[in-house]
Image 1 (spheres, rainbow over the protein chains, first blue to last red):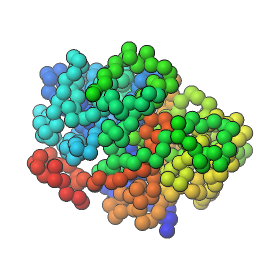
Image 2 (cartoon, rainbow over the protein chains, first blue to last red):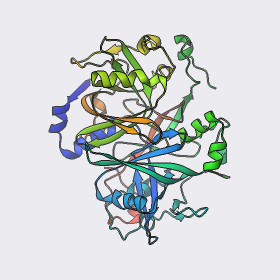
Image 3 (cartoon, rainbow over the protein chains, first blue to last red):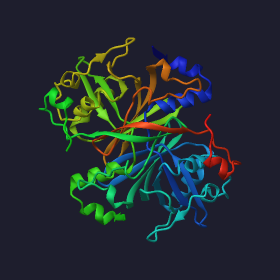
Image 4 (tube, rainbow over the protein chains, first blue to last red):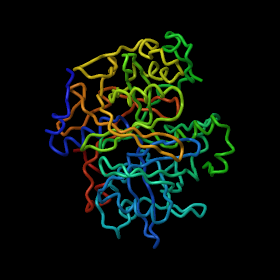
Length: 217
Length: 217
C-alpha cells in the first residue's frame, strides 16, 4: 500500500520521527569523516553525510553545516586554518565514524575517543584518517549562508588525493566498491554496495531497446 | 599501492578523465529523476546525482544545476512554475533514468523517449514517475548562485511524500533498500545496497568496546 504524507502530516510528526523521515527521503548519501585541527594543533574528527560534488573543474566539494554542537569545532577549525581532510568510511571503521557524532567537549579529540589514527601527509595542515582508504586534502574556498534554515554551505577545492592504485580505472573512474567505501541513509543506517552496471554515455538517438540492453563500456 | 595526486596532476588529466575522477571522489551519491512541466504542459524528466538533504524542519532538499544543456529545461521549468517532483530510482528503471542525461531538444519529453510513465497526483502541478516507489512533490523556495564555478543551488520544500507503507519504520526511518532505491558513483555507475547496520544515537560516554559492539536499536 502506498502512503501519502503532506506538509501538515509532516508537521504533526514528533521531532525525531520527522528528522528520521526527512533525512531518509533524499536517498542514499555520501558519508565521510572530516578531519581538522585548530591553531594550537588540537585535532577534531566528525562524520558528515551532507557531502556533495559541486564541480570537476576546478575540483570542488560541498558540505552543509548545521547550527548544532558536534560540527561546530569542525566549522571553526576550517574557517580558522583554511584546511581540512575528507576521508571515506569503509566497513571496518563505520562504527567509530558514527561515534564521532556524539557531543564531545571542545577539548576532546574524536581520534582518541574512537581509536582512529591521525595521519599527517606531505606537510598538509589537517590530519587524515590512517584507516581510511580514499582521502582528500581540501583547501577552503567559500562559505555561503543558507538563511532559509540557518545552515551554511562550505565549498572547498580538492588539492590532494590518496587512493589505492588498483581502484583507479584508465578513464578516471574510481571503483569505490573495491576501495570498500560505504554509503548511509537516514540518520544512522550504513550500507555497502553491489554494482549493477556502468552505463555508456547517453546519446539522444539511442532506441529504447538499446537503452534496456545497455552494454558496458 | 597508494596513489597520490595533487592539483597539478589533476590539471594534467584529460578533461573526461578528470570529470570521472572528481565525480567519484565524493563517494556514493543520491540519484533521482526530477520531473517538471513548462507552462504549456510539456513534460521534462532528468536524472540528478547532485541531490542532498538540507534540513528537516522545514523539510528542505537541494539540487545543484550546471550550466549545461540537459538540465536547462528542468531549471527553467522549476523557476517558471515553482513545482517539481523528485523520484527515487530503482533497479528496474535505472537504465531509462540514465538515458534522460542525453541532450534532447526542448520539444522532446524524456517520458516518451524512455517509456517511463508520468503520473499526476492530488492536483500537483509537476508529473511524478509512475514506476518510482518513493516520490516527493517539491515547492521551489530559493536559488543561490555559486559563483566560484557558475553553478546554481536550488532549494525546495518537500510538501508531498509517497512511499510504500511497509518501508516506513515506527521511528520515521525509511527502509530504502526495501523500497529498492539505488545509489550511484562517478558519472555512470549504479549500485544496489546491502545494509550493514543501524546504529544507536551516539553519546559521549560510550566506551570504545561498546562502540565496536554497537547494538541495534
